[in-house]
Image (cartoon, rainbow, N blue to C red):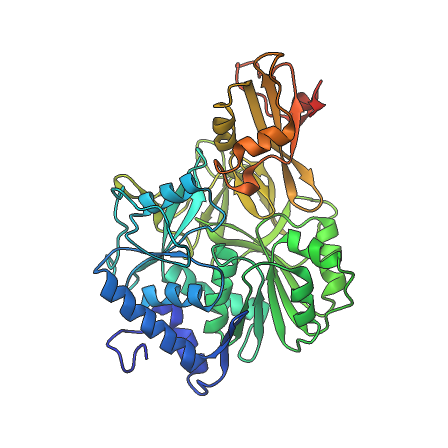
Length: 479
């Protein structure tokens, strides 16, 4: 096993798990649709995968394009045991997006159940591995850049492992618990939940796909459970009209802002649970945690700083002291940087602070967000940059102009909509035609759900596109 019969050291992101499971390796560690594995069996699987990684390639990151389950998690952790970064690829990506991600991350080894995946013709820049023996890069995830092209980012092990103890204390996850992860492990919210749970000695229940009925069936008989969710999952659970789930003691929610109706549902379904809303970002990890609920005075409230996090509000020039401005964060949980053509590009300043462009204010009760500096839309917990979809629509021969935006939606947080200007009167495709045009060009969740025809796209006084919804909807006709 790792750290015993092999020559591989126990990585920082598994040290707590070996300690927690050391007294009873027969305890169940992971559960999925294909069955359950004890800690002894799961670490044996990790060892097998680690040997395969070393046999198949000498260096470089290890790609994962698998459904959520013990195979995905074992590859992720096996890569860490041999000092190689694991790179998680999204199963919903269209072919061009997947090819770009594989190329940019420099992947030559990918664990997948697909018959064929794109090859990386010439890696943009190999991901660093082992540049810091005490804290190696272990994770390559993706966050959309301004163009929408998946942008690889890097994390070192301690950026996660240093948060295990405060997160465990906050949510009371401990040995003997079962942590339910109904979302894809490609989403860092759920992937972190899996690794964190093992380090607390808790069993991990993973699902290949989210099904509200299946999750409720299991939670109704659970006696010591914690569950990770995004707000849209709460709504899906509520639609099943469940009774109170008394055996769930912690609910961890991230991916989009919790509104008043989300809090009401969470407290009704999980009456005995501590419900926590986590605000953060791929680059920042945890920033704040809200266990108070919706603030009647401040709808942008996202809680108090997570333990170990310092928050500053600065103006556009980076000067501190602004009442409302860019949210800057300093913490031990920050990422390493983006993987670009010239290597690792870090936006972290010399003072250890960085911002992802969110705008907010900081008061005695905590942090409040008032918007995003970028145009990014968050729908169902997934990030969509309108510019990417607009670029694809611009290639349509029957369109002269377009704007993609997000509108408030009770289920998804924001719904993707499009405003289009036709090139002429002869050919005017309908909404379904335009949806079909985008399929295969962008991920399905990025395709606008509703379409509107306008005579012209509104402009600001500076001649730039005016993305305010009031202006966009003026004279718009749904198609």
